[in-house]
Amino acid sequence: MTLLQPFIEFGFMRRALVACFALAVSATPLGVFLSLRRMSLIGDALSHAVLPGAAIGYLISGLSLVAMGIGGLIAGLAVALLSGAVSRFTPLKEDASFAGFYLGSLALGVTLVSLRGSSVDLLHVLFGSLLAVDNAALLLVGGIAAFTLILLTILYRPLVIDAFDSDFLRAQGRWSAPLVHGLFLMLVVLNLVAGFQVLGTLMSVGLMMLPAASARFWSRHLAAMLAIAIFMAVISALAGLMLSWHFSLPAGPAVVLSAAMLFFLSILTGPCGGILRRH
Image 1 (cartoon, rainbow, N blue to C red):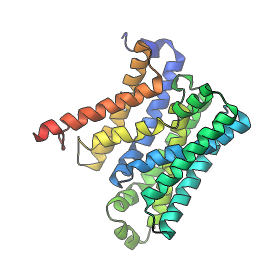
Image 2: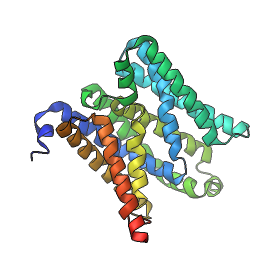
Image 3: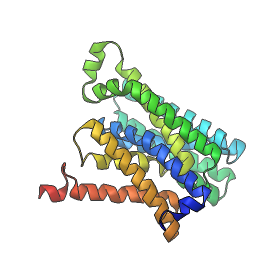
C-alpha cells in the first residue's frame, strides 16, 4: 500500500498514471505494427518531426496545449507525406528520407523554441512534464486513444495483411495499400502528438516502441503480442511513476527507463529467442 500511496493521495499522480495508461493502450499497439513492418525507427523520426510545429505553436501562444498540439500534428503529417513522396518519386529509400527530414525538423524545432523560450521551456518541450498533466491534456490524450482504438479495430485486418503481403492486399481491391499506409502513419503521428503532451518529443516514442519490441520475445502470435505489449507498457508506467516519486527521479524518463529495463529482461529471459533460453 505504501508504494501506491502517492496515487491515492495526490491528483497529479493519478492524472499522470491515467495519461500513461491511455498511451499504453493506443500507442503501444501501433509500435507492434511498426515493428512488424520493419519501421521501428520511423516512429522515432516522426516524434522529432512534430517538434517544429509544436515550436511554432509555442511561439504564437506560449505553452498552449491546443496550439502546440495542432502545430505538432500538422508538422508530423507534413513530414510523413513529404517523406513518402520523396521515396516514391526518387531513388531514396523511405528510411533515409525520414532520417533526412527528422534531423532537419529536430534542429529547426530546437532553434525555434530557443528564439523565445528559456532552457526550462526547451526541456519541457523535449522531455515533457508528466507530473504537470492537467485535465485538458488528459482529455486530449484520452480522445486520441479512443479514436485510435476505433480506427485500429476497422483497419486491423488490412494492417496485418499489408504487414506481411501488400500485394495480396492490392489484389483484394477493398483496401488500397497506400490508403492503409497513410491512415496508419496518421495514427502514429496522432499518438506521438498525444505522447508529446505527456512525455515530450524525445521520450514519447519510448512507450510506443520498447514494450512492442519486448513483446516479440514472449509470443509469436500477433494477438498475444499486442496484449503483452500493452501489459508491459502499463507496468512500465506504474513502475516509472513509483520510482519517480520514491527516488526523486524525472517522471517521463523514469517511465521510459522502466520500459527499457523490461526490454532487456525480455532479451535475456523471453521464451521466443531470449538469450538464456537459447543457450
